[in-house]
Structure formats: structure tokens, C-alpha cells
Image (cartoon, rainbow, N blue to C red; front, side):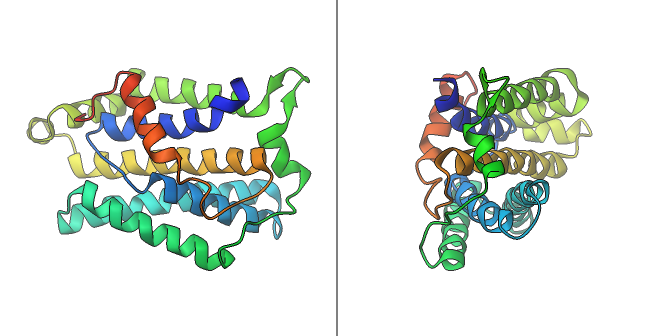
Length: 218
């Protein structure tokens, strides 16, 4: 059970900071898929730590693109991310010709299937670390209070001197990091990277976050 919930939990933790900051992202599943494809391909061509960093970077850049486009052109995130999600999904399919990336190394598989001290599943351990870090970020830092303030009332936050644009884009980038990390764990768990691997996680992540107590409106 611990292994089963880990991928969704990691992705949902990233989505939590998005919704807490008043943001919406419908490209989450496509970002996860694209990160997984980049990770799977990179793990065959470079050391595993660099492949993991690449997956995190791809997730971060995808969400930076979403945030920047929404800020510059003043587009609603609901519509924008619905469109960019299809773009990210298309890139993933083009990179693999619609095929899954298999033949991954034991190091890749360990992140999704391994155990620490032959007891604690590695995905669950990673999930706990992410939970702790996000709890500290949102509950114990000035930045976290700014995120909640922007999610509560962006206009009032801006009048108070909070850099609303920076906060919104940065929350999306942090969410992207979690999506990338979730993709690495998912890829290791199924021992393959598929261009459609993340499709089912969007609605599950939203449901998990809302059931967890984060309002849809921030």
C-alpha cells in the first residue's frame, strides 16, 4: 500500500502548492509523461543522478512556461494549461514515436521498486521527504505565507507588497519539480517510460488535494 500511494502522493503534494496559491494546472498528467520520457531516455545516455536532475528540470521548465505565458498574455490557467498539456503530450509522443522506453537500468528500477534496509519501500521514503519539505515550506516560511496570501486574495496580497507574479510562477515551478520527481518514481516502478503514463494522474491529484482540505479557489 505504501508503494502504491507514493507516486500519486508526490504529484499531489506538488499540486497542493499550486491550488494553495490559487493556480490551476490541467497539464499535470502530460508534464509527468514528458518528464518520464526524458528521464528514461537520459538514463541510458548519462549517469543516473544527471538523468534525475534532467527530469526535475523538464518539469520545472514546463511549469515555468505555463506560468510565464499566463502572466505575460493574461490568460486563464484553466484554458492555457489545457492547451499546453496537449503540446507536452505531443512532444512526448514525437520523442518516442508513440512507443514506451524500456530496458532501463537497475538504478532506475530501484527508485520505484527498491527498499531501504529491505523494509521501507524507496518510493514511500521519497514521498515522506517531500511531505516534510512541503510542510516546512508552506507552514514555517515567509514564502509559504505569501503563497497562502496570494491564494486567498491576490489583489490584497499585491497591495500588501507581495510580488504576486513571482509567487504564482514560482509555485508552478515547485509543482513542476514534484511532477518530475513523481515521474522518476513512476518510471522505476513500472520499469518503463510511456508517453501516456501520466494521463490518469490529473484528476486523481486534484481529488486527493481537495479531499486533503485545500480549496479549489486557493
